[in-house]
Amino acid sequence: MHELLTPGSDKPHLLLGNEAIVRGALEGNIRFVAAYPGTPSSEIIDRFSRLGDEAGVYVEYSVNEKVSMETACAAAISGVRSMCSMKHVGLNVAADAFMTLAYVGVKAGMVIVVADDPSLHSSQNEQDSRFFARMGMVPMLEPSTPQEAKDMTLAALEISEKYKIPCMLRTTTRVNHCRGAVSMGDLPTESPRGTFEKDPFNMVVIPLVGRKLRLVQLEKMEKLQEEAERSPLNRVEGQGRWGIITSGTSYPYVQDAIGELNLRDQVKVLKLGFTFPYPEALMADFLKGVEKVLVVEELEPVLEDTTRRIAQEKNISVEIAGKGKDLIPRAFELDGAKVKKALHHYLGVPYEQRALFAAPELPMRPPNLCAGCPHRATYYSIRKIFGDEAIYPSDIGCYTLGVLPPLKMGDFLICMGSGASTAGGFSKVLDRPVVSFIGDSTFFHSGITGLVNAVSHDHRFLMVILDNGTTAMTGHQPHPSVELTPAGKVTPRVNLESVVRGCGVKRVFTVNPLQVKKTQEVLQDLKESMKEPGVSVLIAKSPCPLFENRMLPKKSKVVFQVDPSSCDLCKSCLTELGCPAFVWEESASGETCIRINEALCSGCAVCSQICKSIKPKKIG
Image (cartoon, rainbow, N blue to C red):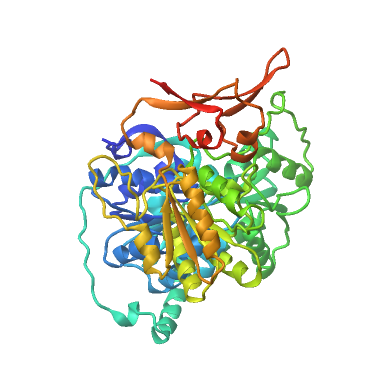
């Protein structure tokens, strides 16, 4: 039995915030879950994938976030509780469905989990998803701990079902990935069957229907406003003449700060968990009872602006601060020290910043493609053929690390699927070769439309699809053309080359990038053919070695070693290939050598094809 299916008891379990959301969904009888993986939300769909069959939950790794929301809303419209999860930029992809779904509503509870990523730990931007709740006019809850993540998942289901509208659960990286004690409630045993009643003039959103639903939505918001005012998820703590308004992961930082600054008897805290619609009457009452207020929140001044508006509308004379110099920063994550400094400057309380411990600064360790990664071999061969003359638009995935030296294969990137589209734009305005990169999972996510556009407009570039048989960057999740699947599980596959040809591409070639000479021969032919208009596609197909080793039986291993007698220390292996298994060493006597760390070597043999001094060695 999976840990998250443990029967309810008084014994708490140590869970990730994401695991707590899964448990809350199970206790809330969610029976349909769909998502495209995206850190920091990935563990939600991954845990559901592992326990779905046992729990009687349909689980789907959707092709992208928009599709996940659309499939999940169909289940909720049919009376089956559902959930879709995504990271903040995934909500951009799903926004088209999200905005109109807020009009149409649902029959059963539907939770939309959106995980923001302050400090860009694994994202291309910082984005505050609270704006989407306000723009789409859907209720939103914000947990601060794993226990709240579980409890608020249940609350979100109840709110959604009561008001027939999807409910957003907004988390951040620190909530998703922290661990905490979580109490387990009872798991339901009944599995509702879906039913659908035709009602096109409430569910087919043509303009006539949309105008009517807009008014219904505004009525829902009035009722949800009243719900927020009385919700136990919003509470006032402490006493004093100063106030702090906060929510989500900022709340624990506030608690740490007021404790360490000995402000327990001087500061009242309004902790908001049901953050949209704003509990305006509760906030107004709080403002009336304090002399000055600091709004502590990550990213944008959403609560701060609302607090100022409420004070102005209610004619409440109170000093309000939030973002600003020496106060709460607008960029990146908060922490206890930042909040303490802000309280020190705003309230004038003493604060001496102390180092917890003294330690030497660690050396920089830039992220790197793994030893044996086929993307490295692809990049090496392409650079040999196209060099610095070509423009290299890239895409979102672990292959984006190719931007770093020595590979330096990445010139432009904005979002998922942009590699194909921007390549087309570059090809029309520049008289230079254009080679774009996109991963197999990202291609299915949002690269197909860019490719179709390129074909229909006769763009002239080479699209390289890096097919490693998995969604590697977010934890080796499956995608439509995945070939390495768990033992005993058979899934339909979408043939990647057939899809490319179906888009109208005439010049399509598939290579194994670990075969360096053959790959470069194909690339040379493609370079010549690119003198003519039209898009070409190279599928660089070789499995991710980490995933392959995890899924397939262990075999005796062949690694490679440098023959010091023939190595002339030209450093090409370091300056052109840059595999992390290579080590440059200098002995105490001053002699230098290059060796290969056998523990890191995957045996891909790429290095031996470009340097005669590298030989195989069988171990195990």
